[in-house]
Image 1 (cartoon, one colour):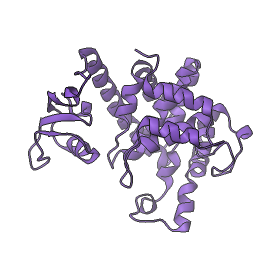
Image 2: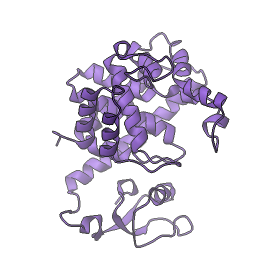
Image 3: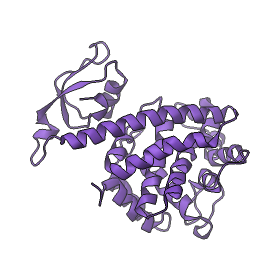
Length: 301
């Protein structure tokens, strides 16, 4: 199967690459580090033994051909959208003239993927390599936001705009010096404040583009605000946060909690949702119910 379709628990017979690049053979895939190493290696395919590992467990079976086609299609869409998004965001970061409409095709592709296979898209965007982490996170948040919009029955234009807002929500991080953003070890108080200011940095750059929609600007500036006023950068209260910003907050936190990071193990989706529910008066609980539906594929084919 294509290596991007690998999941933890599968039994890997062999990887289509030289052993000098990845030397493990005939093992149950259990660790994110092994999965990321396989993704980084040359070659696009792996051989999986469906009589062992994930598919051999009680009550489980190999995915249907239909499910595999969905997974392959979603994987290709994510790869294409990540590449296009990286190019467009980097152009904005260095101050190049950028047509806002360049973000529409990638948002449209992700909306369609979320409408067809929300659980698959959520799974495929959960593991992020070091090089693509920032961009994949933005794409994942855009996908989740559009999924919540679909769940709420919003119109197509609004759902697409939610996707674009998610893609651009962390734009400000690209304006922070890499020496701070990629620093090994704890940040100083000054460095922490610089990082916490990324929503404002992103907003101040994006607002210079006359065609930038208000929703995109509000999400960029407000995705770290919380209903009880304990968020940043402005400490806004619930009455000051519209539904689009509230959606961005829960999607941003969900993806952060469920993604593998160098300093922590990824949480499951259920663990992330449960934790957010436990944070009294910080997150919109009605929207958390919708996000839970999206990430579990409830009511979807």
